[in-house]
Amino acid sequence: MESPPVDFTRTMPAMARLTAPMIPLGYGKFVRADRVYALVPLEGAARGDRRRTLVHVDGIEAPLIASRSERALAEDLARALGQDPPGGSRADERYPAQEALF
Image 1 (cartoon, rainbow, N blue to C red):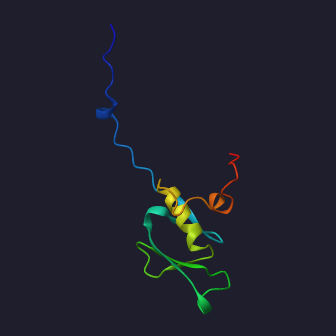
Image 2 (tube, rainbow, N blue to C red; image 1 turned 60 degrees about the vertical axis):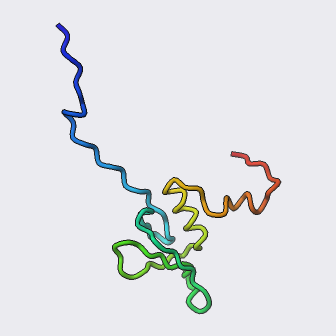
Image 3 (tube, one colour; image 1 turned 135 degrees about the vertical axis):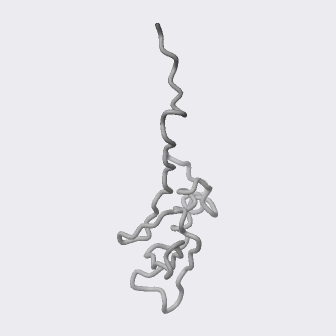
């Protein structure tokens, strides 16, 4: 005699959700993409010596200093969160007539 099919929704506990991807801030620093709430580009005397952008992260009181540009970080954040990067792809802007190879 054949046993009835098993209903795994009743026998298995709920699976944990996957965490958001990590994005690099540069020089070995990473943050979760879903925790970043502001990017502030550094200008003038504040910029330099590997300082490009202040990254405000939920749960961390002081902003982190990233060695990457605001634009590069914003593109990585958008991709990690499943959105279109702001302003399109950099390659498309530099070479509008260039055919994509990949």
